[in-house]
Length: 116
Image (cartoon, rainbow, N blue to C red; front, side, top):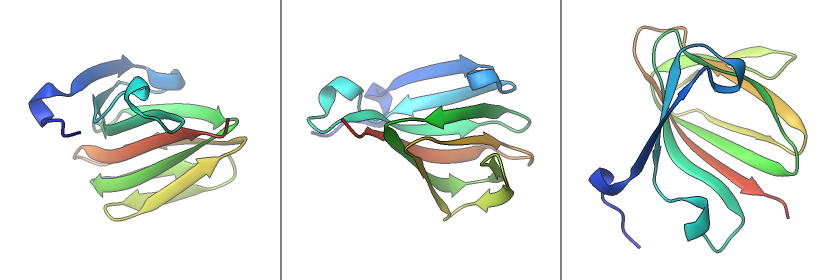
């Protein structure tokens, strides 16, 4: 299946998971289109000053691949700078938050897979 960018579903989430500002999602494919247990497969754009609040991934894994920009990932114990080329894996009860503390969009490919 090929999906052209112009045909992808776009969502805008205000104060996502208790975060600041509006985070934008361009869904490559939706959950119902996968045969594997996949909840999300999208490009997430976090504008400067925006964030995704701390949330837990129980019974699932989330992968972030940072495409451009930079920001801070908070796993509840450490705050780590992330930038283009970095990859993050959070899952099975772990939690995280991400914020864009820079002056350009933080663009992340996000994929969430369910364990069962």
